[in-house]
Image (cartoon, rainbow, N blue to C red; front, side, top):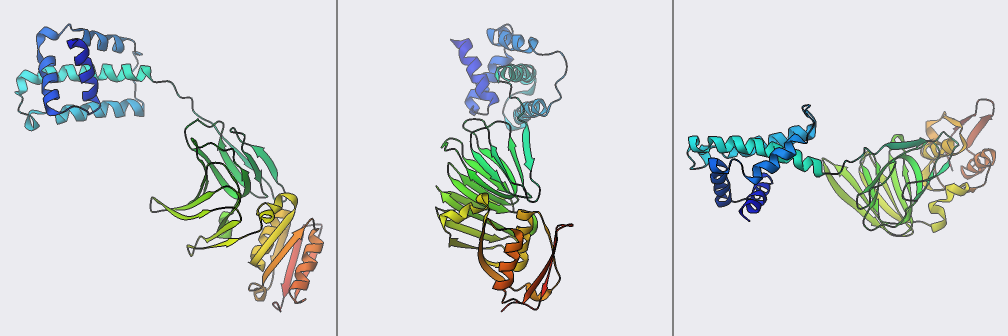
Length: 340
């Protein structure tokens, strides 16, 4: 019974769970030569011999050894009333046994295989449908990049990264929250469907929810600040540079309309609209008039050719906007005197 008690006590000591009285009892026991051949030491020696004879210079090993030395330094006579000569042998035993214990505990831990990261990048004019390891579905928009692990660990966070636009249909799992990282922005869900727009160069970030509930946060100065909790039909628009946001309502059908070639714009400036259209249609826009920068539009284009889209925008501008399409070089030049 005493041997079992000592082993349990020593394990607690290494984990920092012992009090002064328990530590003195343990040091007295280890300092007693009569206990040199105890079952306790035999267990430690057995664990030590089972290890590879090659030195372990891994970060994990160094961390374990540093923890041991920290405990020994903390045990110095200046912080305890123990006679140094009496406990010198005990300290040596602690070092030896602790290293053996570390090796033994390391042996008991399951080996975790490194989880590979996968990624998919789409070109302008391209969109793809992906299935993640947890059976969640992702529709990845044009000019976007998605990065995800080759498998998710049950009970752990399902972390993925997105640059660009994507619509998610997340499989519900209360034990493994699903988190999308987009630069400093973070979108967290359990199981829902939502759209994220996060092109780094656009300066804006948005999340629109179709089903379920989504929590949007921003990481700033090492801290995570919640911005909003969104429910179906809600959309958050966040301006990254100005760090201000607005939350509005949106028709459910518009949340992921782009999947079916339906593009909805609400109070969007012409330059930003042309950026999105350039990705969707794989075409380059040259805007040659600053007077058009202040033009803002509300429009929905469903299954329209780029020629039809440009003509509708021209009409909405009061016919002040002009354009020329170069089909060979896939370029559209835009100019004009502003909008009416």
